[in-house]
Image (cartoon, rainbow, N blue to C red; front, side, top):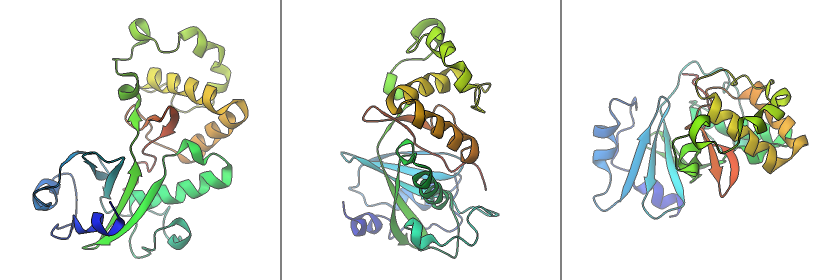
Length: 224
């Protein structure tokens, strides 16, 4: 689909104050009858998964008090919207920072499609979350992808990760092993520094794989 075709899908949608309580009535019910898709949503955006396509369509809720975006020149990030800020716009900024830090491959890149009815529309290549990639309940006791011994051997490096104690630590630490193996020691260290400096709200649904490449799928955080 072209950018224009994507925007046309939403010409009858009402994005005023888009949020998780009104997207069914204001967006999904107004899509073209023949458009086949699945969807999911979270605290910051609605995401459509068009059938038989290799990308998802992201529609961010409009955030407020997002100091991280104020004054940013969005032209250099691929989004000319200077009058409002959203979580996908923040991802464009973070991707730019990742490029400057030499770790852009760890972030799944967004593409700014354009605006329709005062809503910014983005696309992102499809990737699998951690659980989808391994296609099994993940518990070290039963279905270990990487043994605790493997993770223990790298624990000194992983101690720099702020997520080692959260409820998703087993998945996150196993994903970190994959990051270390795929990107190598030098880039792995740079990725950990970038995560510590810029990324928040990492959990099992935000980390995953794009054609076996470990990536962070959603890295905007919860700045609403």
